[in-house]
Image 1 (cartoon, rainbow, N blue to C red):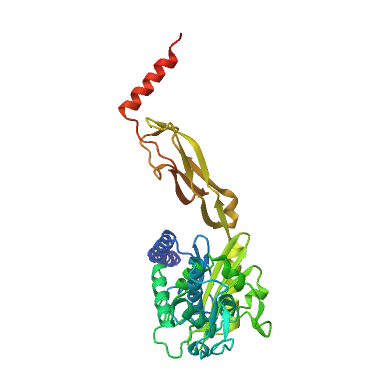
Image 2: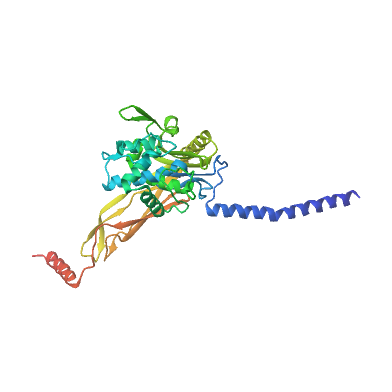
Length: 397
């Protein structure tokens, strides 16, 4: 009886083991699929409807949470408003010293404001400070009217620019983010990151977004930055906050440390403190775990050409940047493939070699080596002259 009981237990154990095998295989398959698609479980989420963390120079996404869902952005809208203003400045359409006379409509804006009065005049630079630092709706509308003639015309430009930047979840209805009467004024965390990345390419904006306190009207009116991270987060340089009943609490926060700039976007956090904490947590995660590798490029002035009218050409391996794990930064290497001689013809821009960048077994990028100068193939007359020169200069008198 004891032997039979033991046999019974052995059979049951074996059946249980075999029953578990498909589950184990399925789990292994899921893991392999996750690795193949590059999905990473960071082990945490943030208290918000949507969020994303990117590195600004390369656009590399380091964290994402519901990043493509469209929500009201509140005053984070003004990132696009300010982008168009920066581009108008860069093109020469407007100047910082231009004076703007406030319209009745601009002066009527509610919400965050600097209480502009109809007919009051301020410079473009003062209006930018009010918009960036104090999130002033009246100043944002005044800028839009000055650039495009009306808020409606400016909004059309905002939507056009959003399309150019690939912001597929975005539609703007005004320049402020006020959403009491809007029907479809929305964007996503991913789209906010895109326009934020574009905005901070204009160094001038950081002159204002990194300021904690300033003033207008000859010091009579104080501006305090709505972005509290500027005051207490190391390396914070901007960028824009926003909050309404619909949007809850939003922010696009950028900071720079060790030569790397990160942008953390939070949408729909329940409170201001939760929003700031979520942004801080994402920035901390990025700076603690990642670094920016930069290759400054390389040039050659004497690459030999076979059969070319020019015996040598100039070539270039372009600059390259990549986000890597901090522990792997010192291990980044590249393998250069460049023939000793290039066969003619060679045109400007032709790929004549390449460099493969990697860290350990991880492939980062393959960057081409391109010709900077041309070398057409020699014609028969040029070949004849070359042979003649050889005969003449090799003859001993």
